[in-house]
Amino acid sequence: MSDLIKTAGKILTDAGIKNSRFESELILSHLLNIERWNLYVNPPEINSIIEKNFFSLIKKRAQHIPIAYLLKKTYFFNLCFEITSGVFIPRPETETIVIAAMHLFPDKNLKMNVLDVGTGCGALAITIARLFPHATVYATDISKRAVKIAKKNVFLYGLDSRVFVRRADIISGNIRERFSLIVSNPPYLTEDEIKSAPEEVRKEPFRALYGGKNGMEVILKILKKTRDIIERHGFLIFEVSPSQIEFFSDLSDYGFVRCYVFKDISGVERVVVLRKI
Figure 1: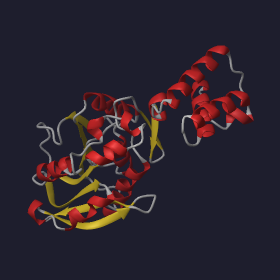
Figure 2 (figure 1 turned 45 degrees about the vertical axis):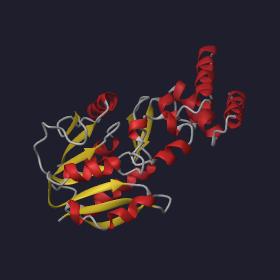
Figure 3 (figure 1 turned 60 degrees about the horizontal axis):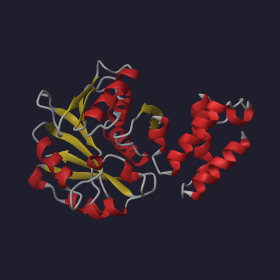
Figure 4 (figure 1 turned 60 degrees about the vertical axis):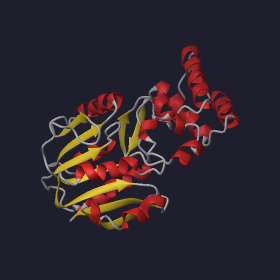
């Protein structure tokens, strides 16, 4: 087994994949349906079928296909979510949105309506619903594939009575509620940033990454479409590029005021909190 991991690690290293041994272990433990540490504590027998499938996945990873797509799962806020190719993979940076929401609403038993714009696999909507057990969460995405996988994750977590996923460009026509909180990790990469992004990032859905030439196209659309459905003094939380933070310093024309900026796990200003005036 150690020879398999060593060989696979070299293949990935030669392909420019960081943490090559760790990822090799993840892939092998996934195929064996065991925890990674069990590869060493209770070394399993590996038959020819497992070995063949293992190197098939290693070859795909060497082509910079995101590991989440290969394992068909990803993690967010210590929760596991099903994922599939063509659906945006949630990042640790986006967990900062959840932290901001917890800061804004310290009473976890509060009854409120929440909207997640661009839900992807549903990670943000589901995490917020679990943290706020009396909240009703609506989640929208323009992608059919994202809506399908988000609905599946909602069902897997038993939240289908409180989390409702709809296909929509920002806001669905059949959602009539007003919201105390709207969250979004919108596409915000610029044209230049898309071109220079790592190869595996560019294998994710373009529409979930590209925010227009200056990265602000979708953000501006959300600002315009949500100001009439958010409660007075309600909050809108965005994940944005650090270079876009300054734009949010004056939003009087949109009916919002910036009240907080949160740093992500790398210490970079990443999340802005706006309040409806």
